Amino acid sequence: MWPKACSAVLRSLFGLIVGGTAAAQDDANAILAAHRSAIVQIQVRGKINNKPEFENGTGFLFQTAEGPRIITAGHVVGPDTKWDSLVDRCIYYRLAQNGGSLLYDCVVDAKVDPTLDFAEVYLDPFDAPTLEIEQALPAADASLAVTSWRSWGQPGSRATAQSARILDLQPEKMVLSGNYERSDSGSPVLDSKGRLVGLMIEASNQPGGTTQGIAIPVTRFSSILTSVIASPVRRTPIPVLANADKGRARVDGTGVITQFGCVFLGKRSASVTRLAPDMPYGQTVLQSLLNSSTRDSLVGRALAAETTVTLRSDCPTIVEGSAYYAAPRAQLTPGDEITPREILALNYLDDVFFWARGFARARTGNSNIK
Image 1 (spheres, rainbow, N blue to C red):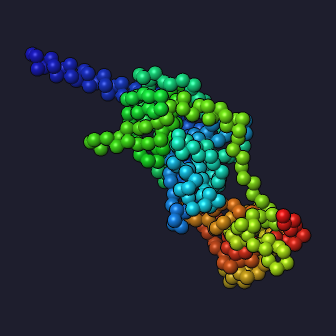
Image 2: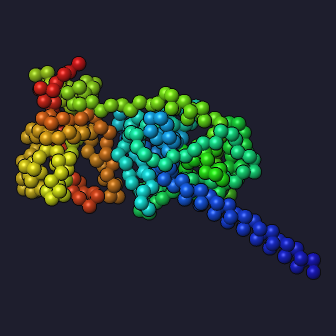
Image 3: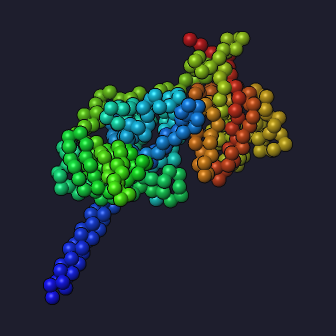
């Protein structure tokens, strides 16, 4: 009877453990469902030693007086010396929307604390759900949820949650149970009320192929989040071409700013919609773009913008149907010209987008060069 009794006890204990684990995971999923719109998927692109590189991570939205910021681990964004040029470093991000996700245009401004491994990314103000922070360390036996967003750019990719227990709690770090990978860096650690209690910064490999998560406790960075409101990171303004940075531009013989880059010329659907932003160089140029036999005739011709359009450092890169826009260099105003060296027809978003790579030239009348 004793072996049978032991077997029954063991089965009972196993059932309690499995049941408790399942309940904890259900709680983590419920927390994620309530805060999914505040979780951010991040990919940072740039060049290291003149080779294109990228870093994936997770982050979350935090509300400031200047609008929401993305908070993530510092090594996801930088440090600044990691990249050949901060001007060409692009921080792309996705947010959950309408049951799917939306990829936003890249932003370039961020502040990184490499010592703490903490970063804040500046966004233009917009209305968005954000996380609230807890001001104290969680209890050692607290049930926590780590919310991450893996598999950048993969169809159906969305944020997930895993329950976590505190294995070690110190003023400078929390060690958490769970299974983690590099792209989990920047994941928010939430308590049972959905409040932020930590920031994931590292996946620590353990014997047997398991991992543990290393997180910064909220008490290490809550003061930084509070000071964000008083000392916001200022977005770098995009200058009009006539006032562009002379370090990346040149002045021609008549004293007019010129700069090499890539501009959007128009898209196929504009022939139906007739929307000015969709054909910034006008209907005549658009008609030439739509006809492959006349498209090449635009190469080497000075094309004048009819509406404001952004000059970017390069043309978009298409990866698995998504377009990654390069960093903006200047705004072309009506009358500014682009002389294409080549014209690209790129397929994305179920449309054809035409881009020109070449030299942009500020109109003489707008050249208040300083």
